[in-house]
Length: 431
Image (tube, rainbow, N blue to C red):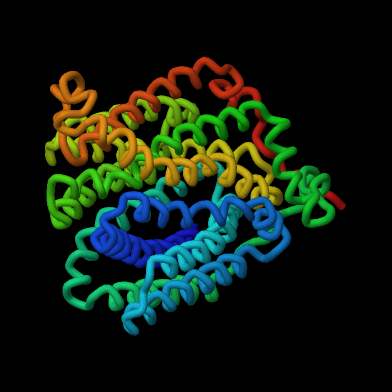
């Protein structure tokens, strides 16, 4: 656990720096372009490139020393961030350069994440998997909570370039910690031996491993569908808030709302979650959908904050429960490629959401909810009309969609009973 705590702390520092940059750049892009689509494309380039190369990345993670994979990934992402700072200082920053930098960071992250999660499996007992995942969620929540507050203050104090340079320093600290610690190597298992071969064969083996287990397929499909709803609302949240209030209020809403994630992840770190982890996944997806629905219902800062708090509160529980299932059921020395495939498939709906969110909002939903729009006399009487109300309607639709998806998923027996049908991964030494 000592090794895990040290690595976790380094990643927490790096994540906080990245969230500072993400918040500052997101506000900068939207305020300079006024385009929801331009803003959404940043999220698109943050996700898609990494998903494309995920199978190869996972196979390489299983082949290489996972500590050095993380060091290399953090180094590349840090240099990409540093280049953006230089462009800001020179006064030459353009939108396409942000897209390029986020593409590089996306590719780096697809190596770093499976290496990090797979290493956690090796250094702590499986009874603590949910707690470790809760700690990881806690670091994300803490960064989400503090970054908007600190970001707004730091942009004024040290300007955009100063915030990005601070992010670069956090990368250096995370790399230094990784250089100090050492990770154990995964033992050889039957699954690992069966997956040996060329890089292409090892990449494909991740698919084969999952396809042989219907419960894991069910988890993948459920999260892919849920991630579409989350991705759509994620990129539209800032435009929704800025349609009727200021950036300062936006930062406060995000910080207070994301404290739900902080509290929940802290709870998971101590408690460890439900004994039947699948109930943690499906049981808390319903309030997630309800929270998304409430965010779109009214132009009320209080109601939106409650909805964000509710949605964020559920995320550490669903994610930690799912991670624990995967870590328990997948052989350790193939987790790199399996987790990479998992991330690619479950996250594949996010780029689609990022691409569709802007055009759907600007071309369809917003015109529907104008003062004299087609829905002004019906739904408009409930949620209001004017700028941002079309986006609000999209939030309501995605919230209902999430709840219906969860109810349907519970009916699928291999998913509901995945912990009973699949044995825990057993280490079978060979040779």
